Length: 264
Image (cartoon, rainbow, N blue to C red; front, side, top):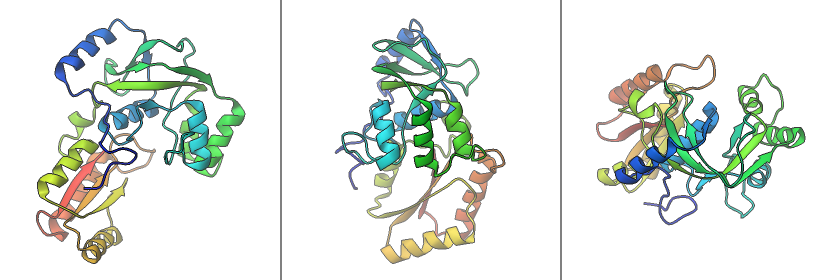
């Protein structure tokens, strides 16, 4: 199996040791809290699952600007979009340790613990620059632009330790997989070469044919279908419908044991 991006080993930020996780949860109850917005919470889940390897936490402003412009951090690591914790809160100080709380689960449980290395203010010019580079438009009718510009102008950066995966494991127990779990499942299948397809919508006929053609052309052992779960843009087909549609397609049109249906 190929190495993860940017490191020899996968670097999930989820705390798998149960004793350490329990201790961190107890500590978090004594720490100052920050209620995350949904975007920052999603980033925490992705960091926890190892999807944003080899990042150790949220990017600082210099890295965010560099990634937006050149798709590389200041140190030269390729990354397609900034992974940031933007907030409207102004009371957080650099050098502190805070509990990050989940906005998408009742009671706002602790999602992660963060060591705040820097607290930086993003100017209107810097925000406009990132928006233009990331989305290729500043039109607020674009859902990505609207969301990104509404997150706040205070950027918190630093490493995090993730303590749960929000509502994803509960709401999508048969589909949600971390990057760690996906790599383990590929190994358990004994697959050496895998075709991967990512989608936020149910797959139509052309998608199915693309997967089949790629699998045959490359003599791949299997296909990994990876769907987006959770909150998407208004009007998108609900995740449970999307999931059921894809599974029915796999059942009817692909040979048994040749497809992994996963999501994040």
